[in-house]
Amino acid sequence: MTITTEPTTETSTFAPPQTGAPAAGFAASATDAVKTYGRGDAAVHALDGVTVGFERNRFTAIMGPSGSGKSTLMQAVAGLDTLTSGSVAIGGVELSSLNDKQLTRMRRDKIGFIFQSFNLVPTLTARENILLPLDLAGRKVDRDWLDHVVSTVGMGERLRHRPTELSGGQQQRVAVARALVSRPEIVFGDEPTGNLDSRAGAEVLSFLRTAVRELDQTVVMVTHDPIAASYADRIVFLADGRIVDEMLSPTPDSVLDRMKRFEY
Ligand SMILES: Nc1ncnc2c1ncn2[C@@H]1O[C@H](COP(=O)(O)OP(=O)(O)OP(=O)(O)O)[C@@H](O)[C@H]1O
Image (tube, rainbow, N blue to C red):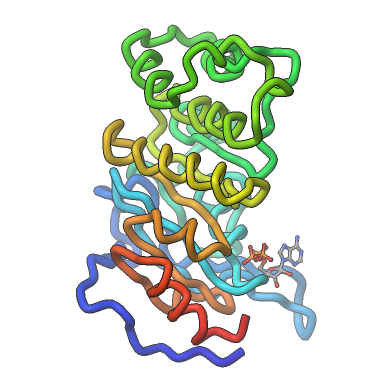
């Protein structure tokens, strides 16, 4: 793969934590993250020394060619997979310092997930789906917050509908509301608009941006789509398991231009 490494942004707030330093100030961070699959000649370095911080109250997109390590990075930072070496932190807490029970609680209380395939429970209404994480955790509902999230979803009466009675875009907005209802430290999205047409995708992306701007949430999203990425405040570009560039205030054209430098 050929990559040009000159920066494409004039200004940058890219300020990764120092090696070994506490990752305070970031909603989530990775420091010297290495993930190697296999051994010897067959070894694949999915992450090859990634240090990155995801600032609070920002919408970040992770882009890069297929196999560049995007999902591996997201899974590690979300505590769904372990690293070969290096560390990750959520809200300044190093995940390696947690036991299994604490890690489970951290994932449940501090992290929201949005998947490409919505993952709603078909027998529950939209509203019940949104409340499911709190119900399962036995946590009380913060009514004001719920109303705030629900009104931002903007689905009114459709909250009584089941997933099969909703469009793909509406289902994904329910899934985003479900991710937000516990007021997580950070929400991770893995190609959240990958199964949606462009109009429905735009609805979901606008909603994610609103969650960051008006609900003070933090979102990190993996995407291949330059238009989806242009909704973010910042894009981090990966190639061959390393961060090779970042871009602030992206536009679809500036992202496309940057992608042309990769051999996709
Ligand atoms: N369980 C695994 N065992 C072996 N190799 C793996 C495993 N998971 C990922 N890899 C390899 O690690 C590298 C990074 O994979 P990853 O899924 O993070 O890339 P990606 O950028 O998310 O790709 P895509 O855009 O295609 O989803 C790839 O070379 C992949 O083949």
